Image (cartoon, rainbow, N blue to C red; front, top):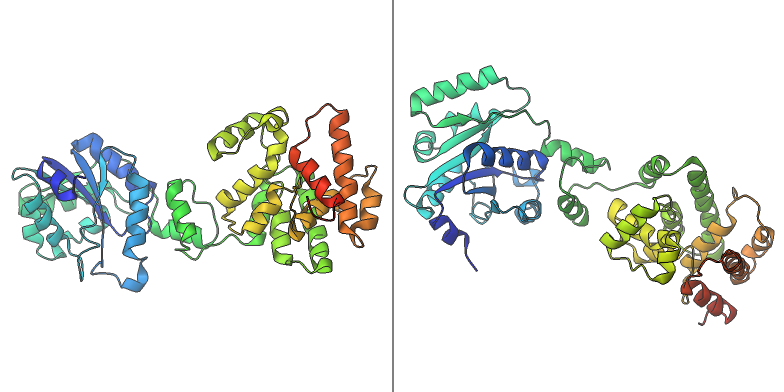
Length: 403
């Protein structure tokens, strides 16, 4: 496999984008694309810094996390690469050290550009060995909010007069995205979909980098926007019933609340969207699902809970997955969520509702038997296919929980 040093040896022009990348965001990527378009380097090399001299280690995420997020955000771009040079360097990381290293690694006549924001540009002459740095590399100055083009041109002219035309202005619109803003969104449980690539979002949540989490109330508010009024009222009813059932039967109330909250989160997607997401998420559309796509809303809901709200508890995800069909080895939580869905207090009346409510707090399995039998009967009479999991659940309940 070709090492970073090997490909740099043959590189005739390189643009380096350094930064903490805590995390990398679409602003960084847009700038890199603009540099490619305007200056045509062979590569844009993203360089996550190790220990920046102006920051304390406690202020930034671990270098390996920042490197991995940068790699995830850029790895599918043929002209982007990521370097470990600075994060593997011990001690404070200075740009002059990186410039010297790259100069010695690249082809002798290679042109090196360092991408710099307007805020850093104003401080450039105060950097360590600034004059040597300006003799070694060129700089591409990027507009930033709070800095006018007139002021940037004046700063560039002053430095170029002193250092022989070493700085160029990147002509592009200012991008109002910052890592600080992204971290704040994470911490407040707000969406970051328009700020960072999805793999970065997933990585940050998986490693709890910014201490952000989706609170129960925040997810409920999000679902209220996603679902119709009728579906959302139904969801509130399922939450209420699941909590009561969990307390009565000694189950985990918090898990019951979360499973109930998210059980129908994918219910109201269009048929085409359900098919598309099943294909994208690897949910098998067997003959039953293909004919009755709505049956996928259980497994799709589990995937959505995991992907959109970062629910990782396997018991919660399983209860969501099987809430509409049941299955042959149902846990107490599975039964609670399924029964709550059948009998929640805001349900319109239907034939077996009173009977199920009668048995709900005396014999849960009997209540579920009534509900599943009724569902199978209704689907059969409507010439709809019945999912095999429904028959398996029915058989297991008849046999006292053993399939």
